[in-house]
Image (cartoon, rainbow, N blue to C red; front, side, top):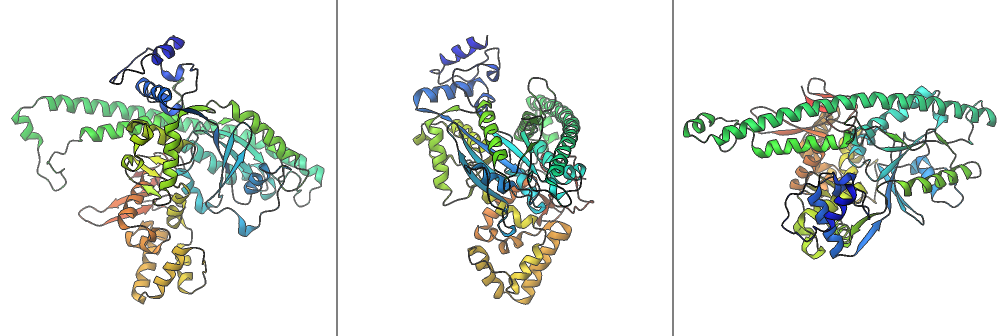
Length: 549
């Protein structure tokens, strides 16, 4: 049945007006001669037919790229590991504190069979929240790194170094593929001999695997409750939508007048009923979330998949480098076997990526689907194919495409979010006033410093009051953005669009006071929360974690 569906679909590529197709089997269950990207298969048979036609019309090529995240607390050896993996000896020097990762560092490791794009994530708490909208479980694996020399017990390592990242993975992609890595194997801690240290490292690793497996089960239960809630919510919305459609079909003047209300809170046409687009948008959001957290075959929750049943022990600085080289060999075996490797894509998709790269020198972010900017007709792609291509490159981290917004330079997102999440923003701005902060390489900071020097005392005090609101009350007054780098470099319209994008990523929440035209924002992904206004759900990062009480 699966093979027959694959052959039949190939014979239908010439039917350009085909709008519906049901071959009695899900395209994701079909064994294809050439791997078809999951981003296409999940859209159904029409998308598959369209994709197969593009492969026939254009030159096709295989994609052998993968994103590898290095995650963990700060000063655990993530950057040293990244550099050692690209060194023929499997070793690197000690990373100075001043050179540690800020936000995210990227690197590339090219092998004969694939190309790894490293995303070295800063472990400092001030940056963790911003990682939620640049990480994904699609076309990627995580190296979750810890150092036993920094902590006194396995429980402390688990709570401070591993648990926050497991929460992040479950929030953005519960089916993430993970390798647990322990560093400093050849660097004994205080009061340890070399032999005793290795035994201690092994004992810590064994205990951690037990804690991690238990945590994954607990997170799976949380995920199951979320699935139940979303499923019930979807049924309720479908019933409400059906009832409204029935009411709409009864187009009598009496019913029409009875349903129309004049109110200050009404929509422009005076109708308070949810529109078809509102139903469609929320149902789509539920489907998107369920697609991430629910196993398609079992209906149960997705769970983190550990690519090894034990912790990988290594040292990137001391020793002979053999432990890092063994990890490199392990990755060379595991990565080519992953189901998404070597997917075939049309040449138009590659041209689409090159077009995005060329646009990034001018714009970092486009807040509407930029079909006119991307000129799909010159790429040999339909508008729908452009969207599918953007989702594909999003999964690999080349762009960020979410709810119609296209970010052309992904690391720029962290620069945008960082000032809102900074743990001492007021101190940073005060240092600008007192000339204690010098960064001639950061043009935005230099320009802001010049602006501060010309500000009146009252203006400076107002600015610091806004900063204090953000740090203490979590309220972001929009004029503050004109004094933050890199917000000061973009227009007010772009600032507003960027805030909307961050809201979709659950980093800020719009707060409109009833009866007021003033719009403020609340930064929600911070350590201190205003309990009377915002509460967080079970997961610490993304997903349905923020609700108004």
